[in-house]
Amino acid sequence: MRLMHDSNTTRHPFGLVWGCTFVLLLSAAFLGCDHATEAAGPSLIVRFGEFELQESLSASRDSVDFAMGESVSFSARFNKPVNWTVEITGQESGAIKRVQGFSNELTEENARWVGGTTQLPLFRQEPVSAVLLVSDEDFVAPDTVRIGVLSERSYPGNVVTSFEDDDEAVATLRNFEFELDAASGPSMEVPAAAGETFYLLRGTDTVVDNFFVGLAEITSRSNDGYFMVPTNVPENLFFNAFLYNFGSSNTIAILDVVVDTNGNGTFEDGTDAIFGSGDIRLDEPGWSQFSQSIAEFGLTEAQTQQIVAVRLVLISDNNSQPDPREPVDFGVDYITFTAGGPLRP
Image (cartoon, rainbow, N blue to C red; front, side, top):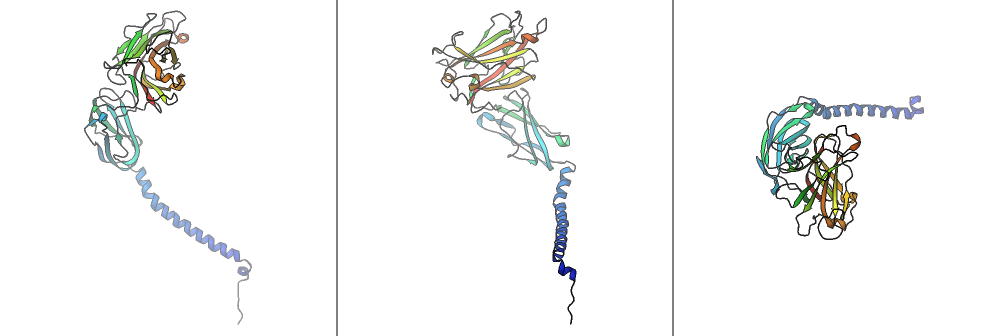
């Protein structure tokens, strides 16, 4: 018997192998597509489907004592993962905190408030309200959660002054050219950044070709006359202050750190060394934070132990003032020294 065979197969065995391989790959691709469709399909439907609030916003407590280390966690549940925001607003201070995340549920792990703020001023002892926002869905929950803040959060660092009655510092106004107006000094004209009172500098530069309007000196009530700092390393020591912009476009603020040069623990103008922040332009209306390392001010490690005063200087931008000249002003509150980085509200 004669054995018959396909001469093409014999001559081209690679073609047969490649053909089988192609069929197998094509089958795997179809199977893979089916699997991906099964896995991704429901997820995509949920992701882009209609949003549903399954559990309304609620808080873990109706009052909180942040100074004692307490916190508030929020809970809510949706039918799909979304970008959500819990916006907390102080009913007296106007402070705002936004707790944000992406999930289908708010829990203690992803929605906890420890008393900080996103938008100054700081929260105080006051009632606050919290609402749930889902921006991608243009959704604002109809329910408002109300919480009583029994005491505000304590922040790390050494407070120079917050301009309250029980401060460990004394603020003295210096009106050398009598250009500051009567409103300058402790003020409650707008809600303070912290507590009830802030310090206001306001006036009109009336001296031709001048720019200086006035200043305030802040000195310590401590026995040795020096301000305590949390570290003596200039690169790690930060000077922080909250500054208020009333909208006067020609205002320039300067913050000075004064170092005692003769060791008597008393600020002596013309004798002690003054290190300035440089010109500070206040662009956005309202409260903002200024922070700068003491190394940027120019102090040495030894000088950080001899800070005897802080000065707040009001400058008028002489080159851009109209005729007649317009008033310039800014507010200051909650001056602190922090270690390792700027104050984090």
